[in-house]
Length: 109
Image (cartoon, rainbow, N blue to C red; front, side, top):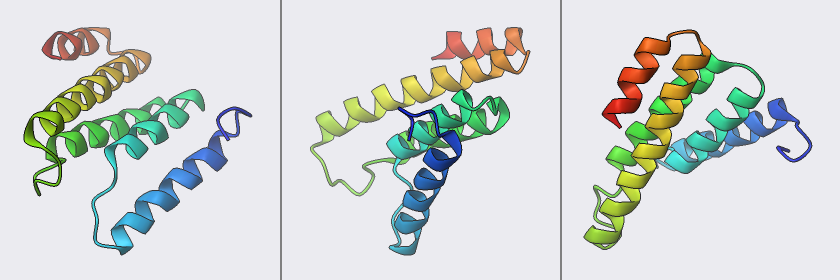
């Protein structure tokens, strides 16, 4: 959907994936949350995108607590994901007009 700029369809697909995970008792995949945030940003809904980026960053922080992947690989993956999602959240904050807040958040990444 993204290729064709069908943002609402893309967002609906990501929401469906998150709902499917929830029905199975699994947490939302932080990669899916980040992709949903990208689609929200592309559609111009920066406030919703920021929330989704923040949720993605938290999901990356929480990922792997079950020990499903080797510790080193999992920690690196989570750290990279947190950095990307947190940076995107800060950029969304800038789009919302809070340049100072965005700068503070970017420096914290």
